[in-house]
Every structure is written in C-alpha cells, then in structure tokens.
Length: 233
Image (cartoon, rainbow, N blue to C red; front, side, top):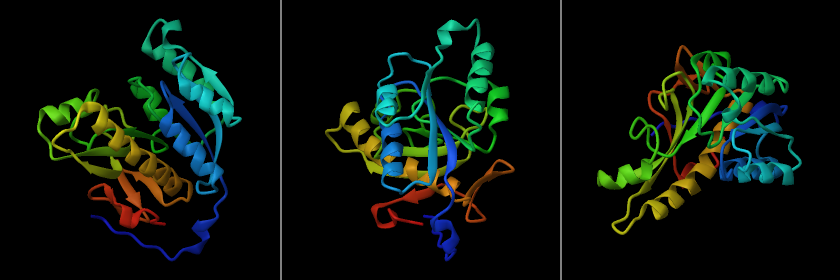
C-alpha cells in the first residue's frame, strides 16, 4: 500500500475549483460529491451536471441541490464526433478545472479526451486493470475472484485504461450475487471518488507524462483506500 503524509497546512483551505460532472443514470456518486461539498469536505464548485440521458435520476439530484443541469442526448447527433464536439462546447461554457465522469456511459473520442487531458477523472467498478468495460460484478463472480472493488483513474483514449489514482477493495463472499456485490462496491465508490476529487482540488494530484503524481511522487500502483486511512489528508 502506498503511504503519503504532508505537513503543508496551506492545502487545508484551498480556493474551490470549478468542476462539471457528467452522468447517465442514477447519480449516486454525484450525490456523494454533493454531500461532501455540503459538508465543507470538498473544495469545489459544482458548476453544472450534464447528462446524455433525459430521464437520468441524477438530474433530479442536481436540481435538488441547486446545480444547473443540461441534457445533451447522443441520439440527436449523427455520429460520436458530432456529439462530443457539442458536449465539449457545453462543458467549456463553465471553464471547469476538472471534469468528473460519474457513471457517464459513453465512450469518448480521442480529440475530446485530449482536450481535457490531465483534468478528467472517472470511477470504474473493478480493480483495474481487471474487468474493463461493462458487467464487472458478474465477471468477477464468474471468475471466482476473492476480492473485487472500484478504481478512480485519469481518463485517456484507452477505455478504462488511464493511470489509476485510488482503489478500494471488498471481499467477494460465498453467497454474493451481482446485486449484493455491486452494493458493497458502490459504498466504497462513494468514499474514494470525493477523496480523489479533493486531492485534485488541493493541487496534490496531477497527471504528468501519463503517470499519476500524488504529493509530488509517482504512484507506482494506485493508492489503496482502507477505513484506517479514511481521512488521509
């Protein structure tokens, strides 16, 4: 496990950075971010939530929190490139320092990813590099894994292949179903995603030469979250 400590007190109350969140569905990770902001535990300003799905419940979560929302359906565009260009224009209206993919179920084009290089992060429900793509919980059970989990990573043009930032691991229990395993993994997602965002907002987390830097040190492997280091700061 990587271990990092800092005595820099200036990082404790940084100026909030503007972020935009992209969603496609329920938005529970969005809610975890909203809750962290409301508890003054996350120095960000939630400028907008954008969804490609008009009926995504996460839009209701954003509206309840007073966050501007936009719907940009990919079905309204002739191809992936046209959608991504329109999405980029909508995002850039807010000039975010960080773009957060919180259950955004679209494969992004390389020009879009390059535009936000080093300032776009995603959460994926597996211990990457295992089980990129969909149906991760079912695949973990089919492979009789003893452990499963979630990973926050920088987004690159490689699907679920960008440099990892932080992981949380859960045991796979003998009587697990995809639903029970997914539920335990989701609990950990709600912990590690706001933490990674906070590191970025505090200037402690960077992407340099396709490597993750935390507190100025290259992460040779993702930071492993546990309840013991829950409040790592």
